[in-house]
Image (tube, rainbow, N blue to C red):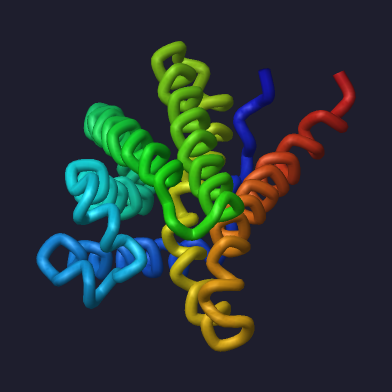
Length: 210
């Protein structure tokens, strides 16, 4: 078992990340009241053929995203551990439901097999890392739980990176070319960053003499 790091695992740019997370979460709620054909035409076939999966995903995933700043708030975690645990349960439930919805939606995408594989892989990794984080919290292995929550958060933040990459892709190579690549780029680099953050803290502790 790795020791609990003495320094925060997360980067100093965290406030910017949290602002983006909340902004994207709030902006995503417009899909619940707006005309999908206008605001998100790429998802129109899902809205017509599998509305429960689509609206389940776009309604619940933003909740998980908005919970991240609260879940990683050190003061709240230390002063109100009971609230932290209940918010963690809510976070896990949101990911369970929206992740399963996202997985089945990915299998039915009309954007091709590369996009489908990327989105399905994201959903599977999101569900898996969060499930491990929840299990470790139940087992009271807090150090390991924190590491897996960072992995889960990195995948939750794919909602942010996706929306940052989409306009870049449209302005450069065009949506049809960019979208399948973005379905991978929005989360795979996030996982590498998460692993770098975790291993950056583990290395000094592992190097200490016994």
